[in-house]
Image (tube, rainbow, N blue to C red; front, side, top):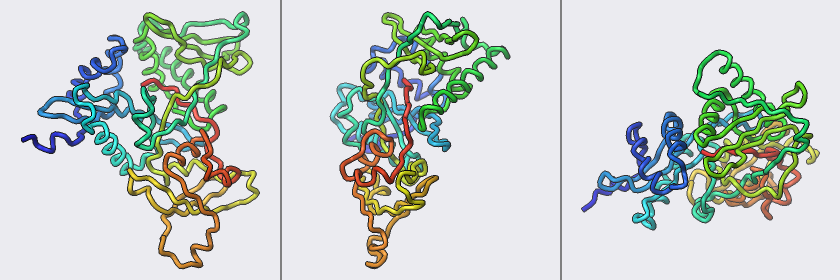
Length: 363
């Protein structure tokens, strides 16, 4: 008889995390060896790997890679889910469900505002409350004849010379200012982020070019790929770019701790009010702490949630005339600015979510 504890999700130690590479290679054969060398050298330094083992054998895993996200000046540590996999012969045994539920319970105890992922199949994640929150735009350069390209990446991107360190810090600062001017929710670029990104790009035979118009830096562009070259990113002043095609859904997310996430949401200036209260009936069948009735208070700077007493006297119930009923999926779509659910339309001019989301990380 198998011991039940064998099927319980556990966080792996450093050496145990390295041992997941075999399952990764089995399930994600499209990833190059050089990319996996980079991933298992760099990302496992600070990530968490939640796994299920049976008789000592790794059967399922998911990797939680940490990022710092800026949302209207607030900074959150948020996990990006990658490497979500179950051994083929063990699929449909409920392993992935156990991993996701355990992960969400832990994140809730940590008061994580949300988590996000890039799905191979959105149908896997929808039952767990995940929904699209970001459409990936694609840009290309225009006026290319006016732009000078200067290679940024050194032959050895791990070098630690003071000149290179300074250039990395300056470029990270430029990227942060570029994103902050256009988006109110994005991952934070710092020196450590950018140094790791450069190694990621190098692992796929990539390059990074600084773009100049005369003496002014106007953008940064990267491409990568061993067999098929692709644009990894293009951040450039609007005067020198144009969007190609329609943005496609790229990132799904799920709000984990609504009382934390709503701190980045505020009362819309168009409402003509200084304060507002909404009674929110939130349905979240997977995270019991979220499920139930909340009093949602908003002002021009922020908002906050307080648990409502469903047994309150009639006069207290009447004090909040605005009633709103949403699932956690609908709340996630709305507060990320992706879509306004039908039930929330009467409040579309009252609630002001972060304007513009940009999450283009790969792992």
